[in-house]
Length: 139
Image 1 (cartoon, one colour):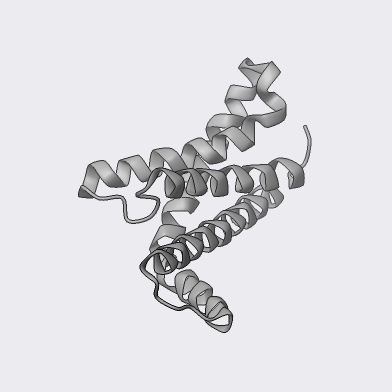
Image 2 (cartoon, helix red, strand yellow):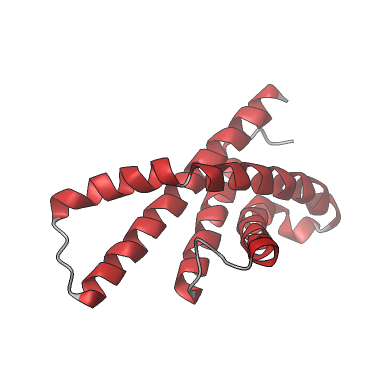
């Protein structure tokens, strides 16, 4: 059990870093569309700024992935053909659900507002699910 909790925390970190990187990338694309010059040496600072600034989103991811992984644990026993990818699906679905719940609660989706941004965030969740799938103990 302690190992599973540790892997969940690490999977959340993987998801958070990927989500932050995609947010940075989308900002850079937005700057490029407006003609605003961004120097390559500015990119790491922007990424670090996003990591620091999105910490509340990290807490949302922690909860969402926790719920998603618990659901996947039980669902894969019933849906055995999906057991090999259960945590990957759960990670992506958990992030998608969290983003939609945020939108319902506050009327905006602060991260992943565009379809491509939403897809990147769901992909970050799936990546966290893949990490959890590969690092947890097999039972």
